[in-house]
Length: 294
Image 1: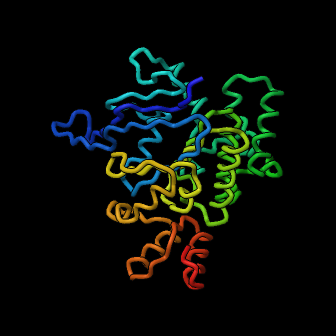
Image 2: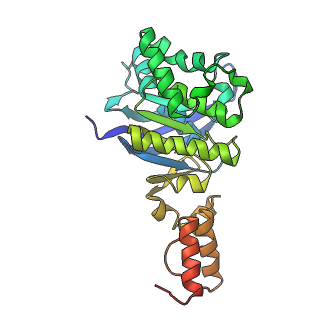
Image 3: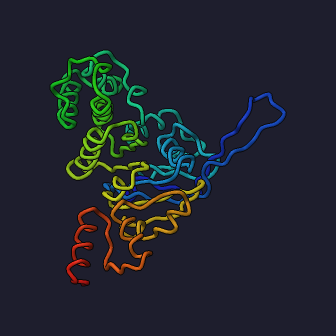
């Protein structure tokens, strides 16, 4: 078994702007020289400003897009090889599931249970196995009581949970969440993040969360930052978010607690320690105000 479920080497992608019969075509690079390894069972967050290339990366890893240059290995298999066929693409999409930003683009049926059953049915599984997968997947996301509801009548957060259940029912080894919380309110966002963490922790699924929410990224095991199509930072959250000035230069911010402590230090208030979470920030402020500078 490969240690790395996903690996890229010199990965690049360029969009071509213009019609195929146009005399002038503008080549728009989206990603350049991405060398990224994702361990099996890892919880990875991918950050970047709008247009940085992070969603392009997600589509490449799911083979929605084909790289312009470079290699992608899924579970040790070169999925960019010339002899990689359509059956192989189908196998990759079973192994690497993807949850999109807008759940309405992912829901296909008029009843929740039928929507979740859609993927397993296309795998040709027996009816009994499909039923087991539908029930267990909806239970995992807390939507078992809504299995006979119409998806279009659900809230945004509930729709996203149904979309996630549909991916879980395929039994993937990796789930990529492509800004899947961007359209949700704070409660819906918290629900989806909780599901991500449980899938990773309890089911051993590799989770890649592509997001622009710093607090979400801070909860991951590892964070990578993409800027203008290039991999700029890669490390544990505490390391990445310590680079506050660099994050500012590329149009990002650190989590709120980290930002507050950073600004206080710039103002001459010497607060000790790092403050990745709000709790750590509060403790650092209490220690400073009480005169305990350890």
